[in-house]
Image (tube, rainbow, N blue to C red):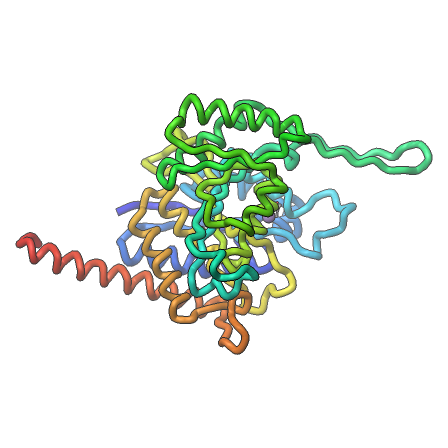
Length: 386
Ligand code: IPM
Ligand code: MN
């Protein structure tokens, strides 16, 4: 039995709706396998700005530091969109990623056959698509110096700086390469080395790390514009893609279209592998979609990205591979039965509510476990062991 503490940060927009289903599934897992889970809620983003005038209250940060893992919904919305506002909801998310030091953001992309029809791509292109984008999450242009100045003559000038150090590149490339070793052994590094200095350092560092430490892997380099094209032209060729912060942000929204919807993609953000406590590696888990203010409060958002993020949490933070796999199998089983939200439903198909989908998946988790238990019992009895 494991005793787990999870910080739960629902955030804004559809965040609270999808996180409620994520925690429902987490509780089903805990009940089924007899783990103890303590959920501690905190504010982040716009709702934190309303309550505390900061997007990341100290209290929330403390909660996250004390927890074994963090489950986050989404932040932002039109209410807090004033460009002149001194604080923005996104600062909460970026501040949290940086404070927790979770530099490797894993975004797995797989196509459930049932969802191929929801993708704008032809189904034959989607066969065997199964890759992970490892996005650098705590550096680059997101965190570089920003400036705004008024020039003589009234013109305004804005500056964002993109910076990477060798060390920042090495550690995320190592995380991606380790992952590729457990998969098909192929690593694609994405940059813009024909234009950007940071990308030239990225490419040289990646080449060296792969040559010296991972000679068993097949490394390819792609320019980001070409990668955007190849993701549509030959998506099944990719295994692990590693790239810098902003390229990873953009490419994964594109990649979500292979899977049918932005609503189904999960993510896991991890820091140093050495930072393990009681066998647990702290991580931040969130769907890749945003707060979707246009559909917030209507109970129609797709909770699958969040539920699959819970599966990643079970696997990466708690080492509960069997439980993580059960959640993924439960999602697949629910989809097989046509349990789909509006974003992935085909014309004429019934759209399930956020809660109906969450309940269905939570039920399937328990059922799958019982079936697996029975199977194990009967296997054991055939060998005479019980
Ligand atoms: C994401 C989101 C965030 C990002 C936003 C909300 C700041 O788009 O997680 O992909 O750009 O990282
Ligand atoms: Mn994004």
